[in-house]
Image 1 (cartoon, chains in turn yellow, cyan, blue, green):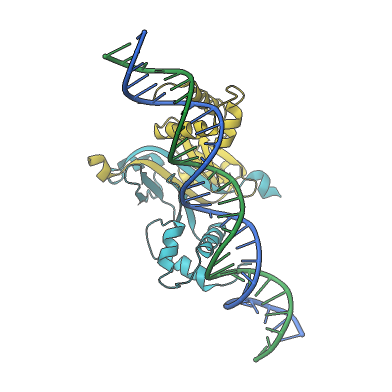
Image 2 (tube, rainbow over the protein chains, first blue to last red; image 1 turned 90 degrees about the horizontal axis):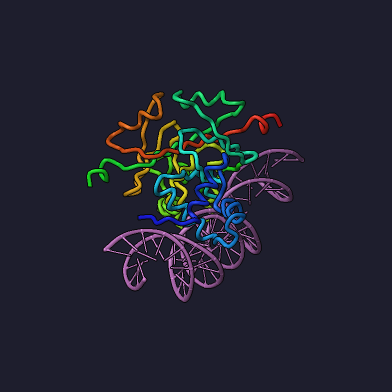
Length: 124
Length: 124
DNA sequence: TAAAAAGTAGTAATGATTACTACTTTTGAG
DNA sequence: CTCAAAAGTAGTAATCATTACTACTTTTTA
């Protein structure tokens, strides 16, 4: 379905090689060092297809940008409303509420979204 | 800080009186039945201020719209990639992975974001 | 190895959201 | 009460992250 392309490989490698949550524009800037004439549209298209195929995650925190995460292992994203940081938190089978004690972060609200197929759509 | 306005009250009531996750445009259409000349910009501004004050939640599932939730109690949002439905799931102190059995939903990936203040910003 | 399928660069267009302006409502001190 | 400052609103214009489009290139496969 999805053919190989060096652009998509470079985008995936870039995301897997860093532990932050870059935006499309930030991925673009980074990949340009390897593929100088890559197009921003190509970055957007490949990020979307990598999210679609489940190879990366899309993280939205309400700052006006879509963020991308090459780490699919389950973890929480602590978003500081003050500085805008997105901090990874691994709760490893503990209850979600236990994040209260994580590294001094003061949680206020949380939103969890699980992506998949609902009962009806799974039947079809 | 935030003065009273009948527009914001109507928006908050609308969100608390329904159990889905409407977009700004859907809230606008609904509130227009009560306040016919309310402005779409007013809806956006008040939704943002209600999120800011923690009275409602913003839920993003990657469909290009910001969704709003008047129910602040902790629950998961199951987003069907096929029909686009956003289904509430109350796991009530259970482990996140247990959502696998929820009502026939087939989970594929999940993204949890916790909003609050990081250690550094809490100091200041 | 050639043609169909998929992908790309570069640019134009889209549209959800935000900003702006003149006007109205709310608030609270006098 | 009352009136001015502060906050909010309607209506419209502007923004800008993201998507669509087109001519061209790369990948796939028979």
